[in-house]
Length: 148
Figure 1 (cartoon, rainbow, N blue to C red):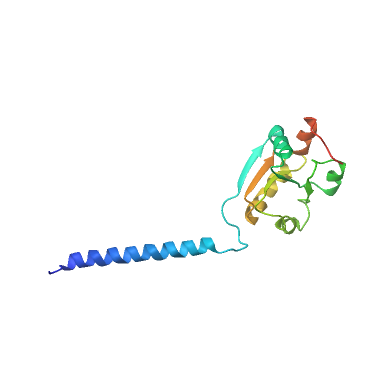
Figure 2 (cartoon, rainbow, N blue to C red):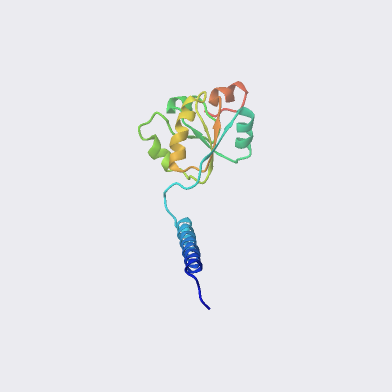
């Protein structure tokens, strides 16, 4: 049986394409299996109001992160909150020590600092963050429990 050159070229191109796709798939799979400290995936940020924030806290579905100053934190905070001051020079280092796979509720006094810290949390590879719009002021105004 005689194979013409056009058929032969098409067969070779198909073989090369098939081989290349297999190599690409294998390399991608190998990368997905590697364990590294590099951030993977996309951070999901959801803005929430007081009632949703209170429900998440009550159900124990979040780690509460207060990014206000230690003085503000001492005057009152959401029970169980961890305080890491956004204004500290080593804020990124401190939050970098947190477990990135946990779900966080982030708040400050009214929402400005907590919103400004989101890009840093995303860059560090945190998976899921609830941003509490209105912050601690909204929490207090709603009559939610405060710990000192």
